[in-house]
Image (cartoon, rainbow, N blue to C red; front, side):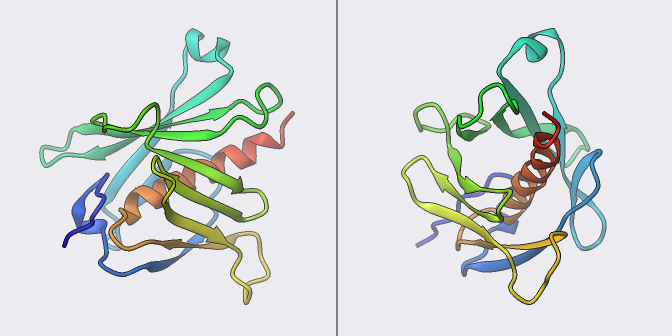
Length: 170
């Protein structure tokens, strides 16, 4: 039975849980690349007047199709720091799935390197924690459950890393 949950591509879904080591990157353009340096995901923060007046920030993740065009695969909304603190970080998959208002939600504290990503049924799809052997905040590990899209999870972690960097600027 195939229990894959592809978001970016089925090729990034493993049949067994995977432990990924992620290194923090400086703020700036968010991009996920494969081992050959090819772009998998490009992530941008939505702007404009409507966004400036909103109590939430919106981030969009795009994959490249076979013709080299960007294709929206997910959007992530987070409460703006100091305004809507405590509201959940939620992720919406494109095209729309059959969940209520969101497909995935972040639970726990990214700042403490102790958070999980759950799907709309409450199932844990990824869990983040500090690697005990590394005494640096520049590295953290994420365990991605079998069948879950690892490129998607890394993209979400990149956004959370960026959000956390901004959340200290109240």
